[in-house]
Structures are given as structure tokens and as C-alpha cells.
Length: 161
Image 1: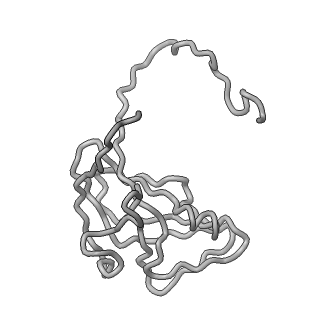
Image 2: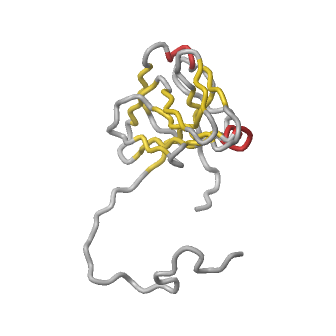
């Protein structure tokens, strides 16, 4: 959808700082790296540091919990592109979903996809949090689905290139 004069849309989100995590963020919580950034940096709220060996994963607390105040909005945790591209540390499950009714700590499962051990220190930026709308499905059982050109063509059905 192309929109002229796109405004900066916002959603109100309550934030609770856990332990001493308020020291890791600014006074209102995670910040975006630039004015145009979609994601807010989540930081590691750990005692000392955590080493993640090649092929291993570690669950790292962010020190915050959130409550989106707009119906139909959830938080989504994505890898930081630089951390993934340069160090091979990515969100283990691809994308983490923070359901709007979840009130626990946001924790990030980091997976080390590189061949070197990497250390995560307290305060390191480990992932990015993006708030987006979602739709709940109203499933309707049917005997047949509508026909499409693709049909049941799955993995690789359009060729290799």
C-alpha cells in the first residue's frame, strides 16, 4: 500500500522495568537507533556475560515486560541485522511473538550460527522489538478450497532459479 504524506504512526505501550534493567534503557524504555527505524533495541539484562558456542543457543532476558494498549497489536522480536550478518547471532526461532496478553519478561533465544564462540555482555543490543497489527482467524471448515493457478505446488514448484 503506497501512501502519500505518511505520518509516524505510534501505539501506546506500557513498560515495566524488571530487576535493574532501567539502567539499560532510556527513561521511557527501548529506543530506535534512528528516527526512521521500525525496531526498538532490546538489551541483554544478564549478570556479567554469557558465552554462546557455535551451534548453541541461549535464552537472554531483556529486563522488560510490555503491555500494548491498542487492541490487535502485538510485539514481534526480530534479529538485529548487523549482529546476525557480522557475528552470526540470530533469534533462534526466526521471529519471537510477544502476545498482547503476555505480561512476563521478554526473553530472546539467541542462536550462534557462526563457527566462533561469541560473548553477550550486560547492556549489549541483542534483538529488535517491533509492534505490528495482527489478525485473529475465524476458521470456517469447508470441503474444498478455491482453485488457484499454483494449486498444491510446494517447495521448488517454480524451479531452482
